Image (tube, rainbow, N blue to C red; front, side, top):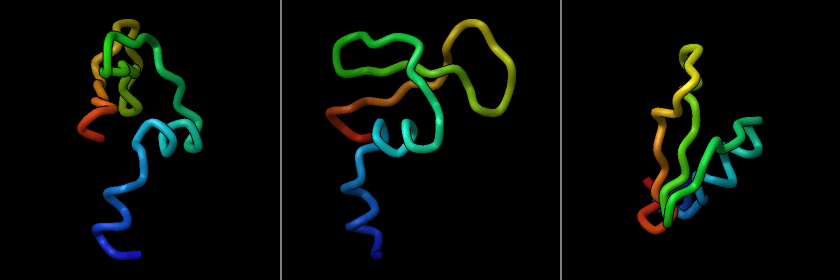
Amino acid sequence: MNIEEAKRIPLEDYLRQMGFSPVRQHGDCIWYCSPFREEKTPSFKVSTSRNL
């Protein structure tokens, strides 16, 4: 797999496969709780339109 192929993988699908569930969705932004610490308010944002 090269970098261009990796960039085409939707982050939302990858995170779901890794066991992360979104906390909320607003427009094209999906919010997750940080995978690096315990938190109650989601701070990790994924833009589905930009795949970032």
